[in-house]
Image 1: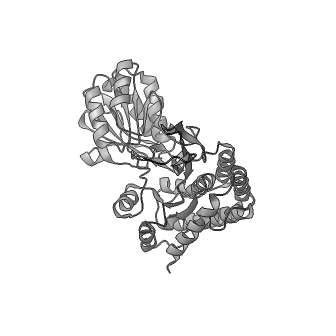
Image 2: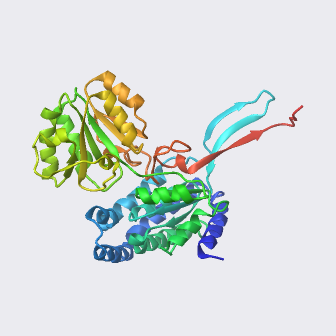
Image 3: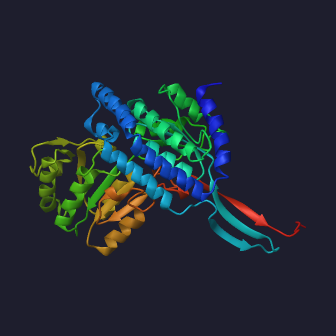
Length: 417
């Protein structure tokens, strides 16, 4: 039997035991996991330092290094997220709806665990704790498969979390990680239909596309964020500047950072120059159409190709385009966006209403930065990812997204005639 299949079989057994645990038992385990991240932080940071050294030797870019890097402050924040998760309401057993049927049977639709959740992700070791915590809180066993860049961090953190959970009374093998970074291990994980209930890829476009196209296990698509900000003709220029700079520069290597700026031609000549200059002063490379380039507002500006409009840079780079108005802006966003997060800056109520209604994305903003699309910011606790699809879950995926439902029916002898 392969190692990956063995992990899945053990996870399936653990999931059965997790389904019988109480809310208090799972919350105590989460607190034990949070404490272990701090008390055993040195071994996690040592493993992460090895990953960072190897990543630099491989020439990994700064934005990816930022995702990979752990330090005591980040480890503390991850620990605090698990503590916060323990304090959130337990979704299991929640009655989603209920009524008495025509024949007197009492029907209830209640939340239940999915069973076995698998994650395939790349260079973000914090995903390890987020996924483990959310899965355990919702009574799911989890199998984690991190990328080669973060493998030491993932294995070390998984070991710490799993041992803490087991020590707190959770079934053994509730939290496991795939040690192999070979592509064949990920492919085998994708093929374990019947053992794994759902597979969640979290990473770049290539990883997500590969999982969606090749998995036999049901997939929840997450993460790719070609996010736009549209400056409408009736936008406040100072508000636009603050929002654009924040959305692009505050943390450029994450999926809710702005990747594209589109501006109404009625105001672009006045609104854009100070925005472009501040972006440039923050190290942002600008790729733009001819109208924007003709402004001469910045030194470092490149010609945008059609590919740029659909690119998630995950770096200090942004595409900029002038549009004729709201209609073209909406068409452009729906054509090139990844259905993640989109924003309009405007003081026009009707323009805002149309943008909210007509733009197809998991999160749509009026006069706010796209950087808020996050489980923690939305009050969901730690998130397992941001779904850009429409079935089962959409947007930041918190506890409810890791549950299914079952119908529970109580009768007193009814038969169907």
